[in-house]
Amino acid sequence: MLTKAAVTLAKGEPFHLTDIQIGDPKCGEVLVKIAGTGICHTDLVVRDAQFPVTFPIVLGHEGSGIVEKVGQGVTSVQPGDHVVLTFSSCGTCKNCQNGQSYACVNFFHLNFGGNMSDGTKRLSIGDKDISSFFGQSSFSHYAIASERNIVKVSKDVPIELLGPLGCGIQTGCGAVINKLKPEPGSSMVVFGCGSVGLSAIMAGKVVGCTTIIAVDIHDSRLKLAQELGATYTYNSSVSDSLVEIQKITNLGANYSLETSGRPEVLRQAVDCLASLGTCAVIGVPPIGTEVSLDIKTIRQERTITGVVEGSSQPQVFIPQMIELYKQGKLPFDKLISFYKLEEINQATEDAKNGTAIKPVITFQ
Image (tube, rainbow, N blue to C red; front, side, top):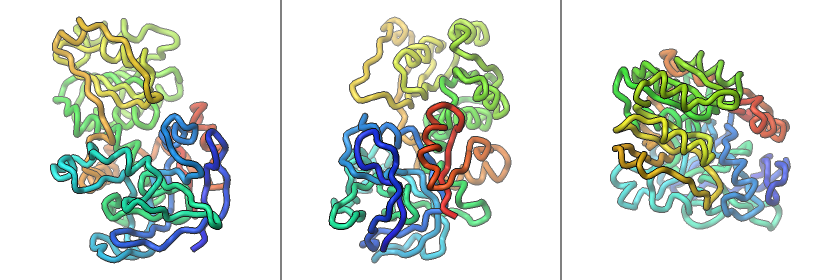
């Protein structure tokens, strides 16, 4: 079938709106009519070829929508179901078998390799194949996904709102709830107040952190961080946030999260910790980026851990986040700005300059 999509034709180029051909769902696959899809920093990193991909490609990996058609063997969803699309995983490696699909040994190949899980492509323009992304390519009116990366959700929340739960919001919330697991009354510092960092702040409030410090360079984002649960905010472009953090926490923070992908910020996120503190590394710098740390800091019983997709089991965690949203405890809708598909290039610019925190493309 023909469908309209935003295609990246070459490295660094603006999204190009055109009709593409999308195949029928094969065994274990699902065709989804996309209602909304978030724009994530990773989409822009891949567009600019900081990760190796094959162009042309249809990006987008925070899709949500309604099941249109299912392939042979699909049992978990049927046409008409509301679903959120998330990352791909193989389901057969040791980590997947242990319920840790976020650490799938085939993660990079399945999500960045350009093919569907069976190694073939589903998208084309004329006789030219187009690469897929994260097993969904949701910058399109319709998307093919694997049953493994589809999560059925309730119909009592607007479906176009839910796409970012599949990656960005899942990553920030999950880093706190699933990975760090702070004790009630503990202290936490979040470096970077984009959608991931702000989601972490909301999650910190949910789990009972009593000191939540937000660090960013945009006053508007710091204001929102305070509204969402931060107890202190610091603009690192005008003050030494590390000194201020040490004053507030006395001996350092129990937990920190680095979401910016900047090596110098990661150094601060480690240095601000108390003994026995843990830093979660979430930001995505270019491949090959190195960071300098004082070994003495690490030797004082501090831990640095990477986090992928919030260490989440999406089939469990996405419904949990929706329930928290319905209870008023996770107001992620405050992060979202809606754009039409025709406005996708403006949406990416707004994301880059800080005007929009989580742009969501709608297809109504």
